[in-house]
Image (cartoon, rainbow, N blue to C red):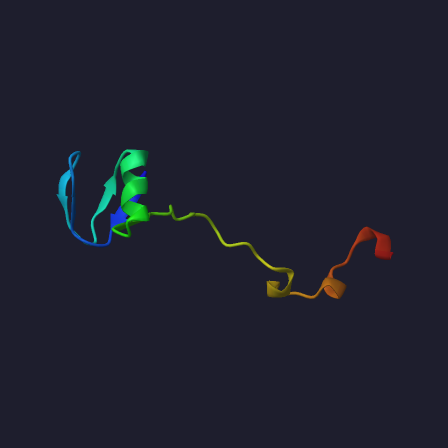
Length: 70
C-alpha cells in the first residue's frame, strides 16, 4: 500500500522515514501508521480526458440537419 508520511517515524522494514516522503509498505504496517496518524494513504490520480457536457457544445441541436427533416 502506498502511503505519504506526515511525521518522522521509524519502521523495522524501511528504517527512518521523514515527513513528505512516499513509501510502498506492507498493508499491515501501512494501516498501523495511518491509524496512529503518522501517515495517510496515497490515492492514484486518474488520467484521461474530462467528460464533455451537452452544454459545452459549440452548436445548437436545432441547427443540425437530418434526413428525417426533408
